Length: 564
Ligand code: HEM
Image (tube, rainbow, N blue to C red):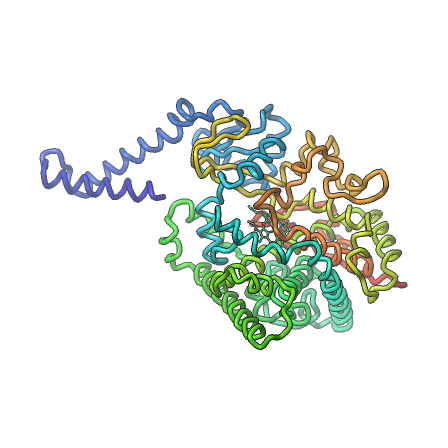
């Protein structure tokens, strides 16, 4: 975009200079400026669209998928399909040596396709590849610059000081919190369904409370059959409460009170609608400072939501500091660990808390949505899972330890297979921060690198011909015990949390939390797609955003199964 402004500025400057010093060549200031602008823009476009990529680019020999539009490259193809899906075809059909080159919005990108190229970018040369500036600016506007966007030494320092909160010895102590919240979720669901059935005039949709429309995508759907619930709504409230408790030592109580301010604010961020799409499109053409000034409702909504959540974080930090001064027992939540490290100022802590709230909430809720979708599609697997959960946990209200959940091997396999087949973050990217190499291939500074869990996790080369099928058994070893690598030969075939120094710091947290929520849900309820719904007929549309989810949500009926 800087280019667009420079072209406009040079055109205007030159036309003024021409009118002043060589008026015989000027067509008048305005006409000359427009003519110069058109000539410069055309030359720039010809250079970028034709000359550079075809004759000069050092990466021009890397294989490219077919059906490339002369001007837009592969943009249309990518926009038509869910995140990472066109690349699934490419990785299978385009013979390649670890890279596939494609173009989107006039920019060449390199998709990494093999464990060798992935491991070099994610591990060996991790800090040669940074997060793209436009993403840092757009998301950083909401989250601030916490661990997710810090780079180099700053990132190393932050990761080192936050890691103790994610060590397994710590995570294993918080399984009981995950479990308590999971029980609470099923209790609230049962109560909501019972209330909806008892009160046919209730205008609520799925949580049993009559309330004004708060703009949830799920609630925009017209009234469903009584007692039908939307999975994402419940999962998202459960994970928000869990990250509140385990991240900051505060129960946000959104399961009990879905209309609470924090839950509503999150929904307004996560289910953005047309305003966000307009803003996303405008971001391709306008600089960030101008984008922020556009008089679009979404802009105000983003600023207000971010300010509100930041204030919640700030209040929590003040309270925690007070607790420390009063020498109350130090908590074991992420905020307490971060405070204890002494490495962060209050504003830095706000950014970290914002990051954990966003990164650690919607992602796990998305996995839960896919898990229930898959359980409805595969009732036999659902039944087998329920049997295992019930045999390991005698009663829903039994106390559990980390071992209780980790020893449910089929549960672990179902969770891992869900995370493989429907990676919540389907695609992410990096930019080469300097001239470098990957597997001996020269990579110029500024090259966009694409890491696509949705593609790698379903590659037939890495997972076999049934890569697109849901088969939890692939995560069970011959001894019946679950593992994290599955049947693939390389652990880089499972890219859901990435790998290396910038992998998901919350992986163990997320896997434990996901297993607890799924065990409680499936242990307690027999779950089926809403009768006669599109999903019950086998239809599925995927909505791509930061996380990929079923469009319109997953609407299900839940029936309590006696005896637990
Ligand atoms: C199923 C759930 C989750 C998935 C699929 C997931 C996935 C990911 C992925 C793919 C990244 C790397 C993004 C990139 O670099 O482009 C990431 C980073 C991160 N995740 Fe997760 N995540 C999940 C849950 C969580 C949870 C529960 C937390 C916190 C409690 C969390 C905190 C973070 C943080 C802080 C980072 C940045 C790490 C760094 O740059 O050093 N995530 N996650």
